[in-house]
Image (cartoon, rainbow, N blue to C red; front, top):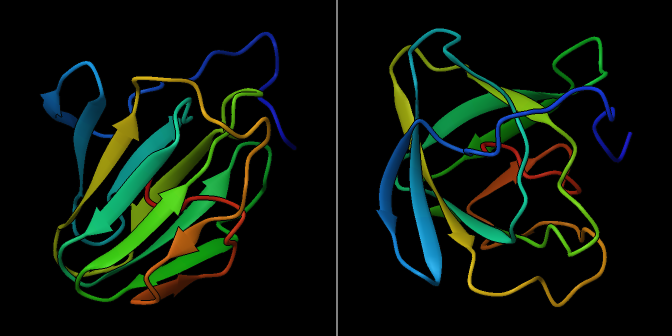
Length: 140
């Protein structure tokens, strides 16, 4: 599935707290409660960077899937860049914490101009972690 269904809207806030915003970037934090804390379905409209300052494990589910098929292991400082592309928002997804303590990561949206790519591209990372689906940005 590459788009949401036309009859359903999903939140575009990729975090639970807006930390900073100006005319070029929007910075969000997402804190997931211990033992399965969930950030529900949302979708990304802008290219963005995701930063995990501390290690954590999470899993995600894309809208329309029956199970949590995407897993992520983030080491301290794990950073990803996701090109959403100008062709539309990412597939809606939700994320849950697999740790026995809360985890927080940050999402930095690039909002000042449209994406230079017409399509969504695979995630690029600094290698301090991995995801089972690099085509999707887990934790966002």
